Amino acid sequence: MIDIDNDARSVSRLLSDLATAEPDAARSLRTRAKCAAMFADRARAASAREHRTAFRRRIIAPALVGGFCVVYLSVIVMAALRWLSSSSRPV
Image (cartoon, rainbow, N blue to C red; front, side, top):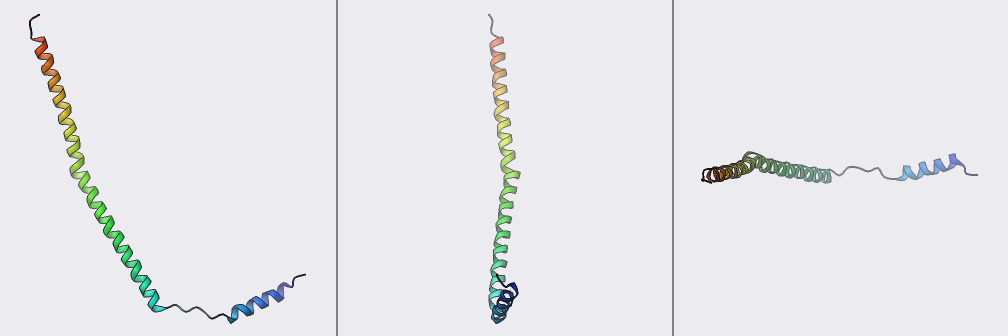
């Protein structure tokens, strides 16, 4: 049978022999700087995306809707003119 107390003591002894990990200050500073740069890049990209989206909403969408309205109204006027010209002819 396995002696659990003996195994636990041996594992504890092995773990106590390990050196404790000390944080490397220079490495943590580099990691923080990389994270800050990455977040700044993402913020700039999001701002540029927002600017492009705002341009689309403000300029392009109304221009497209206006263009479709002009085409629709011109078709209605042409149909009305054809109808008027065909009904004014003597039979």
